[in-house]
Image (cartoon, rainbow, N blue to C red; front, side, top):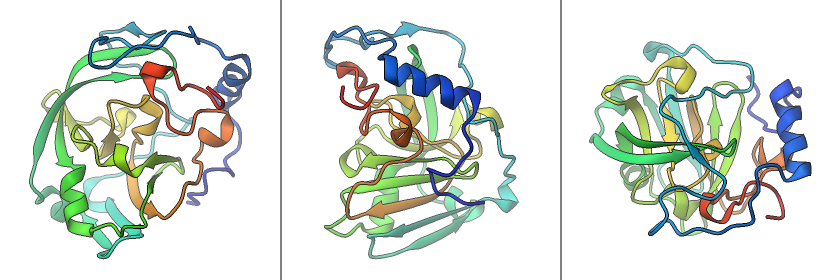
Length: 221
């Protein structure tokens, strides 16, 4: 499957979200601070976990799963599931915020801290961005410092149970301080880059970084 983020056929969701970007839908014009405001501007709290995807939920059994980490790193690495699961495990509890305005509090994740991955692959000084590639062909770009944040985790479990297929199992990235489209599901490759390059939603009108507290929903915000 081709992982180029700009060649997928538009779906109904893509067309709708492109229209939202053109219209600036959901924008409030307010700015909040993550150290004092738990809920970012324009968001509402949910207790379920809505499912959004590009029309495909790949089925990737553990025996067929692998992760490649390459690009601007000293030690390009390939893991199968057993090798990845043998890495030091960690837990994180945090809130998540979707650009479609829902937020969910107190999610417990288990997986591998991105710091553990960084210690293994040793990014080069030139690495300033990370591109996440997924089994469904999705891709999204993330600044290096956001990928390397203390609360970022490559998660295989949520609330004490393995991630389900619709929520990105067997492995997804979680960067809770950015809008959740940056937390790619079904991760298969992590590419360290010496410069920025847009991913799927970034090519379709969405912000390059996606900070919820300053409402970086769309390009130009």
